[in-house]
Length: 346
Image (cartoon, rainbow, N blue to C red; front, side, top):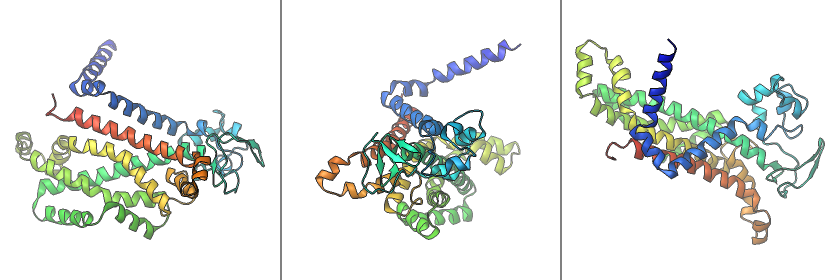
């Protein structure tokens, strides 16, 4: 009896793997490279406590997970290990500060601390461990991107579908609200909101959601206007289906292709915009594990003399390379999905 479901499951996997979309995707080498980069960042975020263990000094991460040493926190039998892996406290997202020296320390150079000698993999910037900031900053970037895109999609799809399906005054109200949001440059509006609310990850998420849902709503509205006049919608209405059932069971699922690519691209763009806010000093609190913070710490050495830029190249190089690879991975993946899902491509 169990062989039949297993055979059906294998057949579905083969059908998916050999589908037109997957064949196009596999043939695109840049798409495969982008997928590799995205998977790499996902793995880095998942295993951040193992790649950049919380130090005994520099932040309060070990104390907050109930561990006294780094080795104890990384022991799977200790409860702190699972907290680090899946529910790390806020203190773990504070970049470990090894010292308060303004001059950067080169990669792997021994630095004496209260807990002994440490060798920062990527050196220090303004006393902060660059390696720790990059690794745990990957978690921050993905948490920000996934949360923002999820709520933007939730609000945008719902209001866009309602606007396109019902039309009339409902459509006018929603579209005028969207026009107001589009009247301002999106990044400027985010800067204004975050400046008013303060430095916090939750406030940054709120600002991006308030600004970004309108783009999804307008695209979904256009797709719904085309979908609602199709025969299967008339058939569902003739069978007695309610408007809400038609919207959520028939109209929306057939209108999502257009925004899938945009959502993937936004997953890479939103953390970069958040990094820009931190670089300007209006993003996350000082010392938070954010790539923009690391670039901000390196500002003096980026703008310094030619000798300083050559000597302290690492303070800006590693964070900048991380930002470039993160954005490149999601953009290559988004472009590949656009090409694969385009019905005009054969």
